[in-house]
Image 1: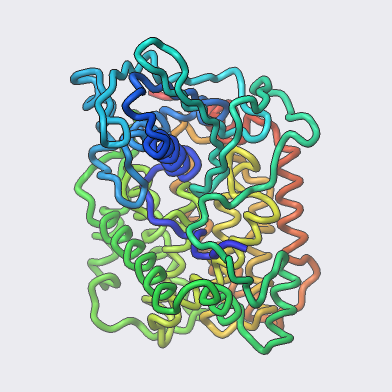
Image 2: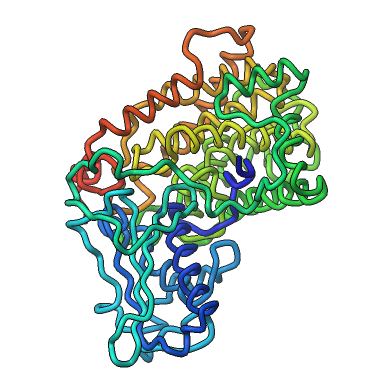
Length: 486
């Protein structure tokens, strides 16, 4: 098992699989050149993007992210303004600062290749990094895959390629791996689980909540102080992101569609009656009595617009779905009776456990299974977290999580212009309110239900495998081809 908190990584917009993952992979390549004492020999680097990364990479900033990674930046700490303008900065003198150690010649038009007609057979989000010396001889070459949620996996230069619309041959693809996990369970987790059925059974057997069980697993390999510090950091960035999104002075989002930011205007309108974000005391309404859907919409839009604008966000579990969990968590914080910091811990640990199951048993990559793997997973995670903090049993938590994903099955990923804007931003707001409604339904029952979360996750995986490639983050189908760009 890996840390469930790796489902929440502090990063940068607009995409976890197309921005965060590629930056991590490029950083790893540059770091390996440094570790192998190859930086001095390197005179040029070449980036080749395949499949979905090539088809929507410009809109997602994949080119800029890999350039920033080669310079030694990581998503959690990169200067977002520098990343936004790195192409122009490098073009000033046609150089790139490799690993932050050496300026090498860099010609964007030659050294960044968008290979739109081929993809790596193992995964649609493949990329190749090559380093050359002054005589144009190959110094090093690495293949990496961005497998969703900012997670990456290293491949091999000889990994096979196929046509962009071809199905990979049997056995060519791989299950999501966890090489980018920040926590190594070198000490065996006391309560390992690989399905929700196992998770609920362990809770019942040991008289633990899901959050308590996950806490025991997390603290088996590191201190409780460190775990709590990580959770506090996640919550702090989520709150800052909502605040920034609500008060942004930028009228439109970048990318060319001129999509207006709606959160600031919506915030001013809602706050004119009662400013939820600024009042000292929180309202004391029970979760099942008042939905305050407009505020939930606002929270989700604020985060999603910050992500689309390349701001600092929490990948939860992806950037394209980053507004859902913060929106529902803010709903808990501002509208649920007796909300407190320990409840935030419970929420995130519970949501992380559900996210782990999606990643382990299916996928959270829109390029692999469509938006059901991003928005659907986040909706399920948010429903589980909220159900836990309003007193749900493990069975009720599982019920809420299953409702959250069941009604997102088949959701396609068809971003207009290859940007994480339309329909992504509104989709986050809709899913956040769906998660709250899922909790309302689950809490009115005793947790018993016919369709299990495990069955729904398996269905999502099968649906993603059957989905045509044009509906999986290629901008070749759906709204992406039916909305005229002006």
